[in-house]
Image (cartoon, rainbow over all chains, first blue to last red; front, side, top):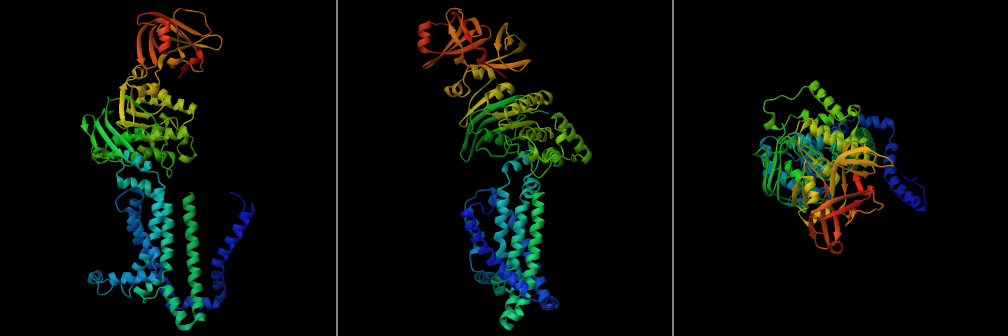
Length: 262
Length: 361
């Protein structure tokens, strides 16, 4: 690789890139630094804040788990097989990324709402979606699934088919060849998809707020504080959420990076 | 242990590859080489025999039983690819042991239990010894040379004691020296284990050196099957003649001689050759490198012999004239030379070729 300032073009590009990096980093840094440690600690002690952060984390984790169970097999099929309508399926998986998330929330409400067929069926076994945790989970799942499926698909595509074929000739069933060869080799991509999906779920506001304003996930709580009490009261909450998300995200990236390089 | 394989009237369509009416009968313990140009569907043929592709028509029979619908994992096959296809997430020992940790597909496994950890370790060590790769067992495949990787791939395929070994251009990615080593290794392994083998390649020397028989595959069809000698001396079609070139294949013992030459002794004659090799070898002479004279005469060529014309084969503008010394040597001449020299079958002539025209391998 060349040094950053090898020529004028590189220098120009570096300046342009720096603007972008600052645009992302500055507001985040400004928010984190704006709150005093004392105020932050007070926010940590706030029961409502803590429970909403906890809810956000595990709801997103649950959504990611569902995404993993349903999405990894789909990703494998998309990487390995050809079937009529494959393009359509790929398009559908990507759809949630391009639609406004509030519209996604409305769409989910149309299917999982109280008076819908699915809503009523699930309510028979005691699961309701509107203003409930399952609603938060499906909203997160809907908007973040594409990240995991696409990352996993790219991971599987990078595994040469021949490796699985050799495994088959050595006595592995298709299942065994998947678990012993394709999956471990695609694992790094899948893991990065998992992290991305989980992080995307954590940050979801639009779809969640329409399905379940209550119980409040962290982004909704933040919005509520801002709308009701103003910037002054919203800022420490924002800081706390940002700090937790950044720490988790960076840690996971480091752990995933280490595993991949092994 | 080894099993015969019959491919009957096989047709396969896979993307741009089409195999048509492939019929091939490989005897138990035989080393069959499928020779053909790149892109002729050789890999698809092997993968179909392995059960990785479903044929559109036809049968694959192993030991007389129809195996066309049998899953790959139940066929008892060892497969080695040109690019080795080692598992990058496993070290060499785990790569070799892979097949032992699975059991063989359902039908083969029956009630047999998997070998225990120490039994696996022992068999991996034995196999590594057989292929001289004991010192590599704890290495990562990506750190190995091409030749080493291919030995690992062979060990991994052979450790499950396959009934049939399929080799897909196993030597093509290697440099010439390593290729020679591994070629000798393949011959040695085949002698030692007697596993029925189908080896595909586009390299004629490989085919001659290893094959009990050779099948020539071109654009999805088997165009000729026969002993190496037959293929090169009596190509069944224009394509075979052009692809393999009509070649004189000889086998004999090298003896030291003076003047930078060695003598290749066979059938009571001695041919001067230039080579670093020793012992029993094969050699080829292209027909266009052999000259025909009416009378024995002095010339700068090292090798001159007298013999009798046994065949004149007409191939359009070119004619292939076979002269019996013994051995039989075929040379190519133009129609005009034929007319000028007034050659006829049964006539006694002289032939000559340079020592450097003899390719020893």
